[in-house]
Image (cartoon, rainbow, N blue to C red; front, side, top):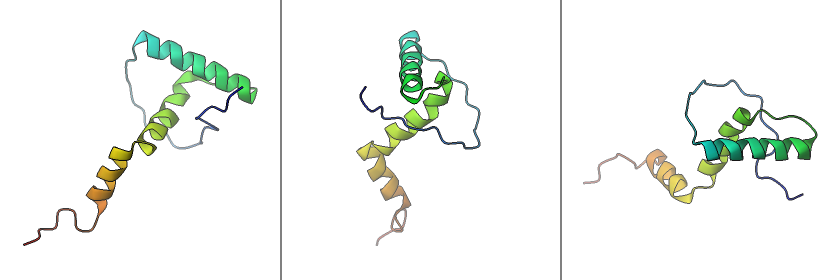
Length: 81
């Protein structure tokens, strides 16, 4: 079986967010949880995958990384003139 991008789920204090998912996204999320559970030998709650998937998506988005670096740079917001 190929290595899945989401590994062990961290035990972190959650923030509750309510969202509606399209039916196909939910079916894919359930299928992903089943595959991950099969790989690790345990049952995975599909809802617990949403946060690590979003984190992985944002961590690998190069444009978002550049935007964050620009926003956090010491010169950001400093007027040059």
